[in-house]
Each structure stands twice: as structure tokens, then as C-alpha cells.
Length: 201
Ligand SMILES: Cc1cc2nc3c(=O)[nH]c(=O)nc-3n(C[C@H](O)[C@H](O)[C@H](O)COP(=O)(O)O)c2cc1C
Picture 1 (cartoon, rainbow, N blue to C red):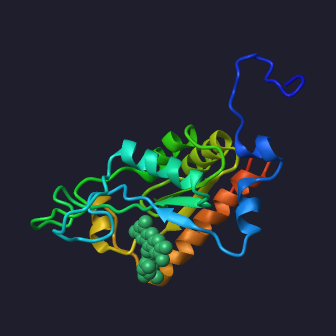
Picture 2 (picture 1 turned 90 degrees about the horizontal axis):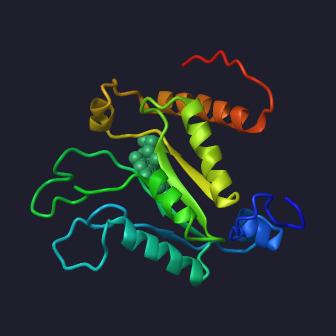
């Protein structure tokens, strides 16, 4: 960079961090209340109902919601993750038959926003390697100027583990495994050195 301009000379819209000199997270957490919007990236949104509804699971709708939330001063948007079979929850409504991956939605909305925090859910026990998630997360952190957040979940529905060919894991054990996973993530994100980790899982 020279004179605040990138050396390649191509104009780049600044992310919030560059804009204001404060991180989006610092700004959001300096307030008494953080206001967040759960994105309906699955059909039916939050209720398995036959009542008419105005939400849409598709990307364009959720991208527009995210941009609007930022304009209105929301601090964050949040994308959940759920793994279901071909008919979703089934029945007449086929609730959550269609859904989007929250990490990829975040990557798409990163380019459309400058300030709002973008949170994606990941089931870390469903055969993720910490290196994969660390790389993707570091990339999202870079793309958003530090506005990416991770909702780590273990997955508590036995059929989801089955979908990945995995045995169901007792609750307390899930959290021991997830703690090891997040410890590795943190090490990968913080270290400038090559790492070796001898974990139990
Ligand atoms: C705010 C919030 C968001 C959550 N998002 C998800 C999600 O996206 N996907 C998921 O599988 N579980 C999600 N959960 C479920 C929890 O991760 C947890 O597994 C669940 O509450 C069951 O508790 P247990 O794991 O202690 O048995 C969420 C819970 C909360 C409170």
C-alpha cells in the first residue's frame, strides 16, 4: 500500500476496519445490547406452519435482508445449519426441505456489506478437519475485514450423525471433542509457526 492505496491500483471499497479504525466486533460489543437477525436460509423460516409467509430461503432474499439489516443498524446476522433428508421435516409443509450453507452465504454477503458481523454455523464433529475450517475461517475473516463469526455446534440429532456415516456420540463426549477441535482452531489462527497437535480425537 502507498498513500493508503493498494499497490495494484485497483479501487477497493474499504471494509469497516479500514473505514473507522475500530473493528466491527469492538464497535458492536461496546454497546449495551447487540441486535442480531437470524437469516431464514431454510424454507419455512422458523415455524413449520401452513400460514402464508413472506420469507424466502434463497440467496438473493437473504442477501437483501443482510444489506437492509446493516442499513438499519443491526450488529449481526446469523445463519443456522441443519442436516435433513430429501423432504426436510416432511409432511405438507416440507419444512426446511431447502436450505443454504451458512458459510457460503457469509462469503456472498461479505462482498455486499461493510460493517455488520456475519455469523455462520458449523457442525464441527461432522468429519471436518480443523485445518479445513481454519483456512476457510481465516479467508472469511480476511474477506470481511474481521467481521466473520463462527457458531460452533456439535450436532445433537442422531439422524444427522447417521447421514455422515458416524456413530451417535453421548452429549458430554461431544463437547469434549468440540473443545479439542476449537483449541486446534485457535492454535492455527494464533500461531505463526508450524504446529503439531497430539489430541485424543
Ligand atoms: C442460539 C442457538 C443457535 C443454535 N444453532 C444451531 C444450529 O444452527 N444447528 C444445530 O444443529 N444446533 C444449533 N443449536 C443447538 C445447540 O448447539 C445444542 O446442540 C442444542 O441446544 C442441544 O443441546 P446439547 O448439545 O447440550 O444437547 C443452537 C442453539 C442455540 C441456543
